[in-house]
Image 1 (cartoon, helix red, strand yellow):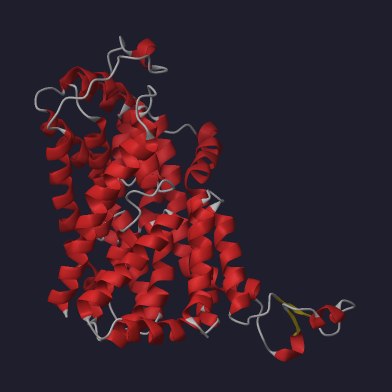
Image 2 (tube, helix red, strand yellow):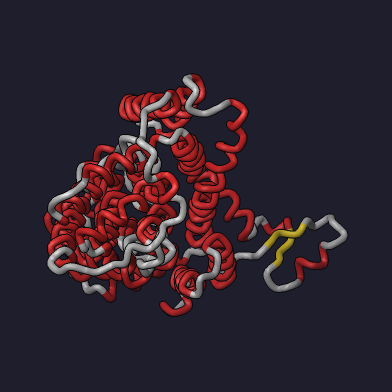
Length: 462
């Protein structure tokens, strides 16, 4: 088996190409799993030997049930359970975010900010990064706050001649660095996936081991943020004061805290406290929704619409993560991982710095294609754990490499919610380009420091 025809390599290449061609990521994962499985010699499906269609088992890609083999689709479905808790967390978080948005609390906060923000451009950018951090742990609503908070602030940015690329970098930092660094909110999911996948692939680690090294990735991103703010706020950038749909009509209304808004505050507090106490994002999100429902933040008659909206917001991401776990099981079943590990370890010549750099570049390639660090982790762990053991990395170094590789590419990928979210707010008046004003700046700002920090970190950890 040559490296080019290794099932893992073939499946990842197919996956990356399909994603770059803007093929739906969910279907891309399924197609690439099938292609990789077929290249690895797995049957597409198993035919019941006693059925009237038993003759199909003679066709390529099909086998009889008497062979004892498992088909690619069955393996894919069987592996999806590995991310079931993560998928549930995303669904419940989506419901919580939609419920929070319906209370009007976001509108109140954004109007207050637009009235009070002034002064240094750099101060505003760092404040927005600080606020965005809360969306990942304290009040875990992810990107849902951006379309509510940012559009009313665009005229403030225009008056200050603030380059929106700096704001894009600040928002992306807030959407990524907290969950990469801290095991709270979305970080509990991210660190949990790393822990589960590392253990599933042959090591025995704990969540404390994961959180004990991921600060290196967070520090690398913080360095990138400071550089980006200094660069993109150094010169003024001129924007026109163009209309923003829905903002003019509401601009003269003085924001007030009403019953619904206070219910949202109560829900947010309960969610934060429950998340800290139980480390369970599904449970904390559920409690937050129930508190808003009990205190009138969400009307009982609107509950079905809130649930549907939450599923619409996060349901697709949840299914992508389920299928990604199944994808990992398929490529492990091909036996190609072992061959890839042996070949890659030999090519790296035993050099740990080169090995770390190559592994991180693989992570960058895969995550850029998928656009989700969470969905990438099961795929990366399948390759990195055995490869890291072969090269001689410590468990701490392997954890760091997997975590950094998962974060790489998420910043800068056109398909990532970490870039799509900032663009949705900053382009509310049509003056912010998704690729050149969000993806390219965030790619350079965060991926380069992450690679450097990842390589240095693995050398320190051994």
